[in-house]
Length: 375
Image 1 (cartoon, rainbow, N blue to C red):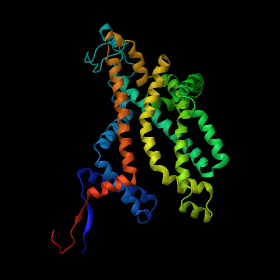
Image 2 (tube, one colour):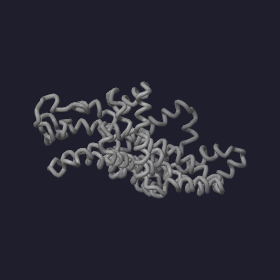
Image 3 (tube, rainbow, N blue to C red):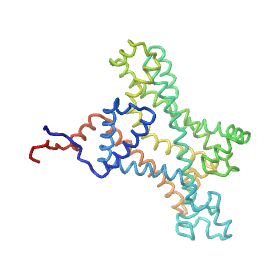
Image 4 (cartoon, one colour):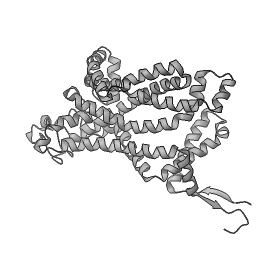
């Protein structure tokens, strides 16, 4: 019997196999014959997971990134106090004004009004997570649609869409988003005040009291502003990738079979260009966190809901007095979250590149002797 190549597995690889088997099982619940038709794709997914397991930086980034997600989800429930709780109001003691870390029950210290800094940061993680979840899907979808149409049709359509994109790219994104958010805040406040269901939804999403839902308006205005400025980069990248793909044989074959242009774009071209877009999206998670915090910092007193950028802005005025914890701890929260997703994104770029992935495959395969041969 001839030799057989098998993967030399590590502990993480066995967890990856379990995860992949679970994903495949879920898919087969909806598509019975999916496994037979997609065996090569499953093997590629397995190899991607094995490649990730051999990237310490990628694993570290994934842990930090998932940590941000978990804290953002459960933050309001594990916070020692509500974001509106004040040690000064509760105890009547002025010692809790700008108290250093470790004072009483304030592990990370308190703010000028006696709010627990740890609780504010945990609530702020929810704000950053919701902002990321709301901004990226909208920005990516708009960018992909515009990029696909421009790259596929070319000509006048391409020129019009790309010049429209250039208009947005010609303005500094942060300044444009700041201008939009300042204009949108009063209108969003009016919408929340006149719609009780919207207020309930905002309260549940951001983990704030129903009475404070209207105070989320500045954060929502930042999110809407980021929708407006976040799509051009994806439009540019998608358009370039589409230009490379549309002349391939499979596209010509699809046209010959009579498939419609939308079907060719979204069912055939899009799946083949998703790799670079996914990497860009992963890196942009950190970008959204950082940009949202930066806009909150610039908007200052308008943001009264706990937000990492607003916490840094409020604490920065006391930094000269030696109250370092008001800036250092929220700054570290932003740094760790952004760094985690950037590290994971860098590793994901190598994992999704077939050339680097194949080099990993050669390293982790070993030859298993056939029956009757000497081991």
